[in-house]
Length: 325
Image (tube, rainbow, N blue to C red; front, side, top):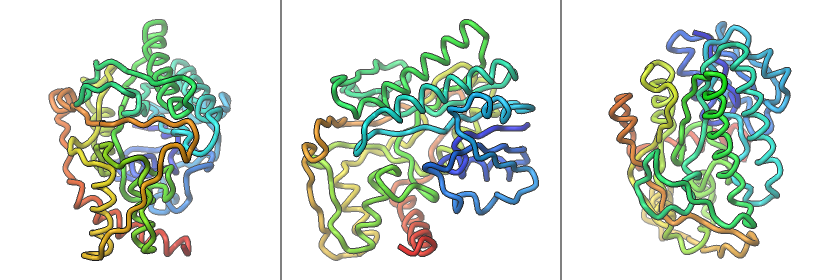
């Protein structure tokens, strides 16, 4: 099979590309390099079955051209929660990009596997979240919800294209990915910036009271879930939670990372009120129910949080050296 990956130079995209190539697939990668990094592609950029296209998913002509001859597209290109900026890029890139991908997929009779997010569950207090749980979005004046709203729109777009055009799709709701090739800023998640702070013996800045919880998933477990969705017909036209079910507070994550980096040194933690980013709202708990993926795909995360963080810290030290940080 020939697979198109949008966002191939990003975190999940680069790990997925390598896994697909190792399994014998032909891969076309598309990325405008606004958030991805060339170092993420170092292990496969010259692979004979890999083609790199430096293009933007907002360019419908480029997306259509990239999809020629492909059997499936894994659509990962997106902008995330606008923590320190306005929401316009998040809303437009995610909606326009998905529209272009789906239009091209209909033309080329291509199956679409699209990245959604655990953020779509929003403020729903009933954890763990099932795929049919209500999506409870917060106050629309708070820009942090732009990412969730854009992904809810994307999901509905897939259902609409299926109803009208017979599109074959899989929606992948990822929970808290981390590991090699993660972005080293907040774009990559709290673990990225916490590891940086611990390595530099700076205070780990924790937003809010630190008691909000998350489930963090090592990237190989996300890639395994995607591969199963590509190769198993039972995945078609379904939504799947993909992620680990181990729950930890953000404060607990900070303390764990400090211990893994600095041993028994007393942790340096600094709590930052949400008011520091203006009008902001957070989610208190986020844990997936992965029963559907277990039942239909045989999916089971393999890497526990402490082991995954140990591997990630080793990788992050190497990446910082490459970037001379």
